[in-house]
Amino acid sequence: MNWTAVSSIYRFEMARFFRTLAQSFLSPVLSTSLYFVVFGAAIGSRIDQVEGVAYGAFIVPGLIMLSVITQGISNASFGIYFPKFIGTVYELLSAPVNFLEIVLGYVGAAATKAMFIGIVILATAHLFVDLTIQHPLAMLLFLVLTCVSFALLGFIIGIWAKNFEQLQLVPLLIITPLIFLGGSFYSISMLPPVWQTITLFNPVVYLISGFRWSFFGTADVPIGLSLMAIALFTGLCLAVIGWIFRTGWRLRA
Amino acid sequence: MRTILSISDLRKSYASGFEALKGVNLDIEEGEILALLGPNGAGKTTLISTICGITTMTSGAVKVGGHCIEEDFRAARAMIGLVPQEINLEPFETVLNSVRFSRGLFGKPKNDALIEEILKKLSLWDKRTSQIKELSGGMKRRVLIAKALSHEPRVLFLDEPTAGVDVELRKDMWEIVRELRESGVTIILTTHYIEEAEAMADRVGVINGGEILLVEPKADLMARMGKKELHVQLSAPIAAVPEALSAHHLQLGEGGQSLIYTYDVKAERTGITTLLNDVAAAGLVLADVSTRQSSLEDIFVDLVKGEEA
Image (tube, rainbow over the protein chains, first blue to last red):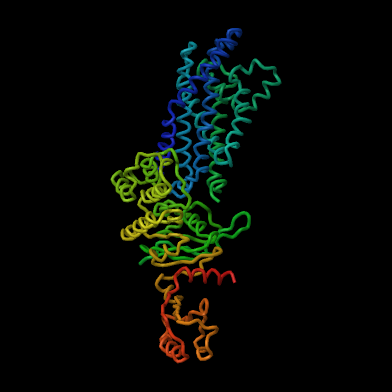
């Protein structure tokens, strides 16, 4: 393993993040506050508890998931698309590194940024609602796995994308609907039975359910199933990336 | 001298069916400067990209320092530095970080003293904390060179290093290349400028249409193909070459003011004495005599034209 290369890529990518630290910090704080004003105070005051949890607190895990998933994807997809766009990818392709090292560097940095945003949101949420985390270790595990797996997906999107429009397309058309329909702001038990069944095909449901369980001890689907779903998703992304580097798809002419 | 880069029957076809490299064979000796000349689209950049791992080969074999570029890519690529033709740089990063990144990416431990030395040699040290987007085009090109040198390559590819660079900077670059060669680095440069090949190269390769037409020591090439022309300026114009001089196969210069005689530099007898005697005997009065050696450019144009014919 060329660990020097991994850490070089990681630090280079993190430098981009630190250059725009104020933006990176402010935008999640602002958007979280807005969600709390709208969903927590305005709408939430008319909703009782959901599964024994006050609505304001109930949406916190979903809100964090919504942000870390979109951040993980956009950071990683931009991270690898930008060198392709400006041409600096030549250096990556001609360096003595293998795909695992490139992925560790880029995805590691993207996941770190997403983690950071997730923690900022958690801290901001804490200012608005009372929160106790029942299973902090499980919470951390779910957070890390989600950040990593969606950064992997973002990496694939970044390699696939041929222009900036395509870079936005998958997150906008597929990921955002999946997150919103995945129970970010409601329990799927609130849905009619037919929709409950349909929802089970949405992979994001398992993530949000598991993450929420780590906060409140209640879940829509069994916790083991949640872990399996995220492991499967991570494995799938890794397999796709492995194939991309073996064949050079959209990377090497 | 040992062979540091060995290319055998290298082929590259694109999905469109276009054959960019049609079986390239080339051995490069350690420590030499090889200039690869060729018109646009000849396959120069494709050849370099394939050796460096940016494009995949269709068939053939390439070894760098004895390491196969596919099976043993780490060892092979660790020896190679690449200065690409396009100015591809992260615009928001500083010069210093950008160069440090390149060294790290190639797995080399941090060495700020070396980076400082490289940046100073390339007159970039004062700009080390500037963002790359603030630099001029020539400076950006120097950053590309600094990045390639940061990981101490044994083989350096310079893909048209002086394209769009002013004369002064070009001379600076030649100087840097010569210094590198003295430190034992093997250099392969592609260029449009024959002047560049003539000034720097030990050997010259000519590539066209994805094929290497020839690789020869520069001096040999110029001697072998070098024809010399003798221009005899006349004091009064003539309408045609006189009958008496027909044996010399002369050409009449513009306006009938001169006679042009082409001869082989390496021939035992150049025939100049006889010609001048015959010219005098034909009653022509000489105003001036000059000779002109054909340049690499003429040779190159002849070769590429010959290929097309």
